[in-house]
Image (cartoon, rainbow, N blue to C red; front, side, top):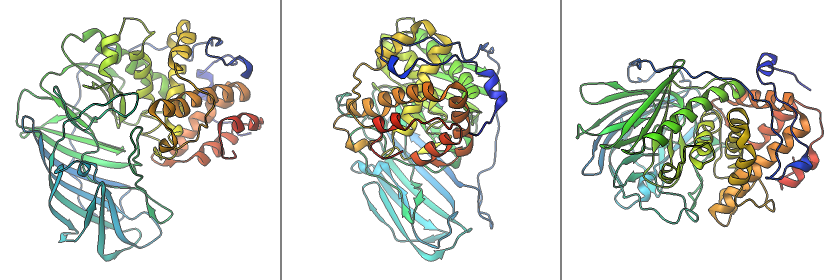
Length: 490
C-alpha cells in the first residue's frame, strides 16, 4: 500500500462511510464535513496579454492554436483565420494529419477558403467531421508543423429535441445567444498509430481532446453583445483577446441580453452569466461554483486556470468545457431558493468536470464513466460538506431513474437511450465509488483521488490507469465490488 499526500489527508477528516449493505438511496450515513471554507470578497479583474504563438525549431510542449474570429451576430456567421502549431510528440514518422471539423456536420456550415501546411497549399479530404490531410513531406518525431486555415462558419439554429432522448443542441444560435463550441478544426489525439475521432452519437459526448494552448482574438459587429469565454478577456481595439494554457477546448458564448455576476477566489475569477429576472438563481450558480472550486482544490488538487465561467444556456442541458460550463435554463426556472434542487447539484457536477474532463481527459465515447462517475460523486462530496442535512435527499432525487442492472463500463452508443446512459455512467458510477470508499476507507480513497488527478493532469486517462493508481493506494480486496459493476475484469 502506498501512502501519499499526508498534508492533504489532515485536511480531509471524514468519518467512515456506511457499509455496502446500507447503500440504498434512502439511507445514507452523514459524514463529518470535508472542510470549512470562507468565501472571499469580490475584487477587480486583472488583465494580461501574451503574444500570439510563433513557430519554433524545437518541439513544442503541446499544440498551439492561434485564432482570429469575427462574429456577425445578426447574420449568424463567423469569419475565422486559424493557425495550428502541432508537434509530433510520438515516436513515429507521420504521413498525414486528422482534424475534427464539427461545423461541417451541418449543410453549408463550414466553408474552407484556404489551407496550407508550413506555408504550402495542400490537398485534403473533408467528409462529415473528418478532415484528412496527407502530408507532402514525412513529419518526423520531435518536429513541428504549422497548419493554417481560413474559413467561414454559417451557424445553424440550435434546434432542440426531446431531452430524454437526444442531447441538447448547443453549437449554433438560439433566440437569445450564439454558442461557439467545438467550432474550430483541431488535431485529434493519436493512439497506437491511429487518429482518435469516434463518431458522434444521439446523446453524450464523443470527442477526445489533447491538451493545447490557445491565443484567441474575437470581435463582434454589434457593440451591445456581451461575450462569455473560457478565459479572461483583455479589451483590444478590435474586440477581445484571450489566452488559455493547457486546455481541451476553447468556447465562446455571445448575447446582447447577458448580465453577469463575478467573485474572486484567490487568483481565480468566477463568473455567472444570466438573463434578466434570473438574478437569484444566477447568484446560486455563482455561490455553488465558488464553493465547489474551493472544495475540489482541496480534494483533487489545484485548479488549472485563472477563470471559471458559468452561462445560462438557452436550452435544457448542462455541458462542460475548459474553464466554462453551460447550465440548463430549465434549472434556473425551477430554482426554489434551497439546496434541494437541480440547479445546485448540477452546478457542483459541472465544476467537477474542470478536474475530470479538463485537467484529466478521457475517451468520452468509449469510457464515459471515467469523467461522469467522478463528477457525479463530486456532487455527493459537495452535499456532505455544505448541506449534510440534504444528503439523503440528493441520493433519492439524483438517482431518480437508477437501474443497477447495467454495466458501468458501457460505451455511450451501447446505451439504448440517454436516460439509460445517465443511469449506467453517472448513477451506477456514484454507487460504485460509494461502495469502494466504504471498503478501502477514507484515507486511501481520498489519497487515490488526489494522486489520480496529479499523475494524469494534461493526459488522457483510461480505465486501466484508474485501477492501477487505485491499487497503489490500498491492498484491500475490492474484486467482489468490481465484478458487479464492470463487465471487463478489473
